[in-house]
Image (cartoon, rainbow, N blue to C red; front, side, top):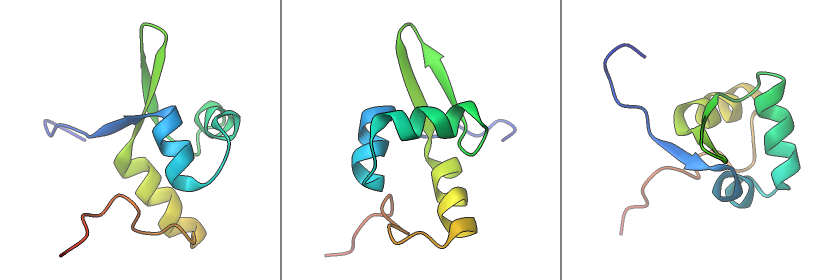
Amino acid sequence: MSDAIRKARRVSIVAGLMGCHRSTVFRMLEDGRLEGYLIGHTLYVYVDSVKKYQLENDSVAHGMFERRKS
């Protein structure tokens, strides 16, 4: 993204929301299925890359980052 601020979440949060193990998220970052960055010893995953992955793979967890309307 150009000048827009991209939202990101820690690997452990993404793993919980996707219903998988943290090591799975690490592998997905390593092989390029997800995008993220490292600050110190903490890896963060871009929320938009998770949404893109879900759309491309018809994930059951589709929309997990969307705000729920009350």
